[in-house]
Image 1 (cartoon, rainbow, N blue to C red):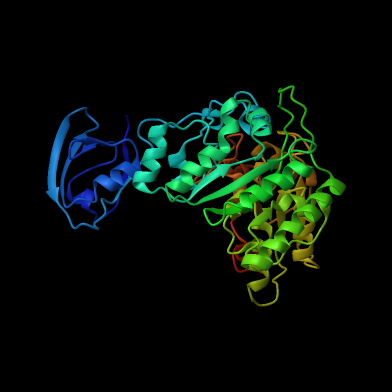
Image 2: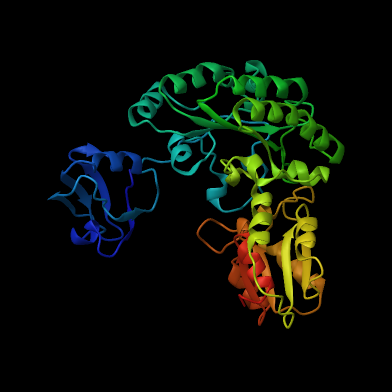
Length: 429
């Protein structure tokens, strides 16, 4: 069990109690804490006894009183103290099974932890949960959760997840609903597997589960060159992606007519692949699944267009690094800016069919920049390709490596459309 403190906020209760990075909180009022959810509930009391283990191994009980709504003011190395719940499924499209060998260990962790679903929006299958987990979700009212559906046909879902527990999806969703839990859902769509009539059935069944079901995202399967699984997976092309858009639009129009909400959303890749216009912002109902690639491109475009600034300063040159799928969007945004060069990067690391910016690696970006020739004053890279909270790519190449190689050019991660426009207009250098 590891409730290790990583940082103590200045002026916080934790600082007043002389807690420090490296200390471990083992128990609160005699209750062993297993995660930050547990810790938050236990710390809601006014009279507290903390069992702390200091970095030198010494244990101490710290007793104090606090306001009922006063926070501790400590950050922790991990959100779960008793280890991440591992996934025991063998899904036919599991991305963890498609990463390159010898990558950092954290990329090989298959998590299926309801706590990470509640805290960070990670998708879970529900197949790795115990009755105790469902009771805890109910008792703590952990809502909303994010659930990977893939198919509502029980037999097909069991086939996709490669576990008989996959067939229990209806019973498991029923249990969440009895606990009063809301949930967002997703389908990883594979051509000739869970599309067609099966997709119609899945959408229809999830729609019936409103209002507990809050949204349904449909994203296309991705396959890297490192996949070794023999199960045949087919990806979508321009025509089949367009067919999916047409198929799903029927449900979207009906849902908006009935409730004013689209509810069923397609991943941006479908529109980019089919070369279709992205839906307007209001279509995304506040972007409930933007971190899942649902509406991210539309939001970026609108942020860019909403940024009203003066004419461009063209006394500097900019290279815009991106995945091949989004390159045309960037070209349309930058228009006639002669000082801007769009640099779509072919993903050699994962395979050329992996075309999203978020899976670009530092090594491929470095090669593309070297091969592009010419000079540049600024290099813009997608922040989605970096490890959360750190400037490091999936292949462990740090952004500073690019800064070293391409100096004196300034390398900037781009987080949103407004920042992108400000850089291009010379307001950020």
